[in-house]
Structure formats: structure tokens, C-alpha cells
Image (cartoon, rainbow, N blue to C red; front, side, top):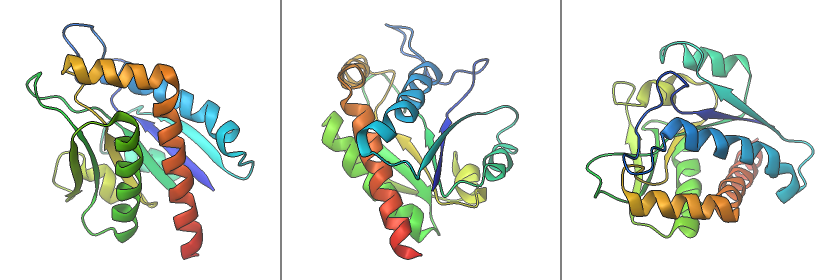
Length: 188
């Protein structure tokens, strides 16, 4: 099975930034995506699965077509939240009419929270008109958007970086991918 791991934002538009450390969503999620790609097979010994890291090359409206061209079985878009430097917690977004998306969002939420141990903001259903909803709606495969922490909150960024550096954040994402693929396989 093929998993598309989409890096939220892009080099020229890096998303939210932590003003203390200068870390952007794009930078954090780029290294996380490549770590997932590198470690998934090592952690789970899955030779039959492929992780494809994808960058947004054009507009948000074209992104689902770019992803669909890869013919993935699962799509994960990596983001971080930002609000007021105080907000905190983890949430995972899914398309409101997608039963598979909701189940996969639940799997990711559980695994990410187990690693970061931050506030559970829950899984969030989104329509195509909501922010992030277009991607969730127009990919052919089940799609979720992860928002594991608030990047503008110094404590949350430090914790996210620590978990990444220890390998536990990557392992949590890889575990969630493995569980999600098992779920999808069982539905075939």
C-alpha cells in the first residue's frame, strides 16, 4: 500500500512560525516527513508499503490532483497549529462525510497524544469549504490533516522538538500509519 505524506505549506510560504526560535511549520514538517519516510520500513519491517513524501508545487486547489496522481491508499498532511502563543494541544482533521477518514483521524490522534502528552483537542470534522477541507474532500484516498501542537507556543514547540529528536514522534506517526493501513486492509 502507498502512503502520501504531504508537507504542509512550502518553501516560499512556510506557514506559522515560532517567534522565539524561528521554526516554521514547513521546516518542522519537512524533517518529520522525511524521518517518517526513512524510518517506517525499519520500525515495522513493511517491505510491501511505500511512503511518498510530497511537496505542494502549485496552488491548494491543484494539490489534491497532484496527490491523486500518485495513487496513494492513504494521505496524511502535516501541519502545526498557531494562535496566540498560549493555545495548546493536538487535533486531527478529517472530511466530515468520510467514515474511513474519521477512523484514521482517531488512530492518529491517539498515537500522537501518547507521544506528546499534550491537551486532547479532539478530531475535527471539516467540510470542503472549511480551512483545510478542500484537500480532505478532493483526495481519492482517505485523507487526514495532523495538527500535533501549536508551533507558536514555546513550550509546545520545545516538547515537539524533544520528541522528534528522541525519535518518539516519528515512531508515533509510523505506528499510526501502520494501524491505519491495517484498518484499510481489513476493509478490502
